[in-house]
Image (cartoon, rainbow, N blue to C red; front, side, top):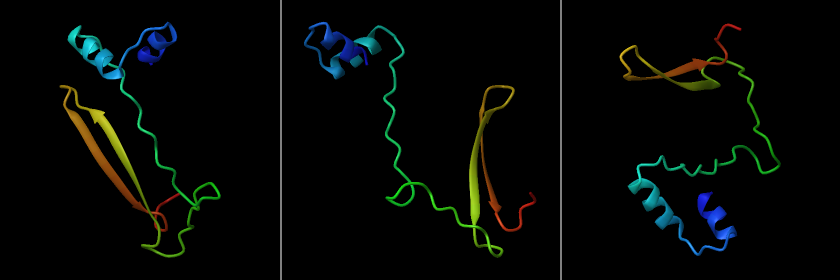
Length: 86
């Protein structure tokens, strides 16, 4: 982003050089967001299956938190869609 602003003002700069300069000066370097892969069919949207019997559709969720002393806490919850309580 910063590289783009400099280029608009007429500077000939390289992204990698700007990155190195920011790191050397101790600045927090903006992280480039990776493109998310599109899920589902090409017509658009995700086709969600309705659970018809146990072990047919499973859902997962990752949970990230920190303990009181600052250590990372990671949990994975997995549920069977058919037998879950609504």
